[in-house]
Length: 110
Length: 121
View 1: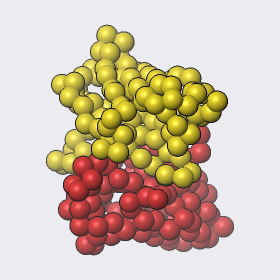
View 2 (view 1 turned 180 degrees about the vertical axis):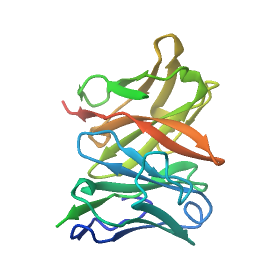
View 3 (view 1 turned 135 degrees about the vertical axis):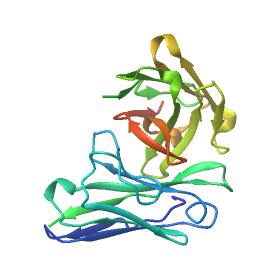
View 4 (view 1 turned 60 degrees about the vertical axis):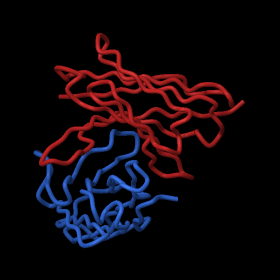
């Protein structure tokens, strides 16, 4: 049972937009920065977004992050087949005194 | 390019100690950063185990604190994890990840591919 809640899966056609939500509480998302990771099976997870909305060098601008209250969002615009992967969010939880993660969302490109 | 590689036994018996090593390459100094161990299982999802700071200080997830030990071998560019008294609930893919600070926040900027550890007799 993950502390941060994500939808298990989303799917959309190529070139369309998907948005993944990550819902938490005041002790994590509500008061700390959120990061997002892309995970292809058998590969190392890759940092996509940090500090809620910043992209590391090399991450396509098709990816964007946002946050409102105790929820964070990852949007992928112009969806491509290579974007098929699992995506999970993370934040520090001040009450648990630990990093907490979302359960992950599988993105399928139809 | 920084690379992390986890290694260790893929099978551990219940009540024994799980021992893993994370080898870091392409990084000029392992002591410049903090390093986390994170695991993922179908039942528990992604779970942070703890981290070790560049000064050797450790911080463990309270849910695992009594069983976890982390250390750094700077001469070998390796970080180690020991988890004692394992049960089947500790079966998971274990990852090591580098923590870096940018814009005042911590992010996990590099991860290993993970190693599957199964706890079974």
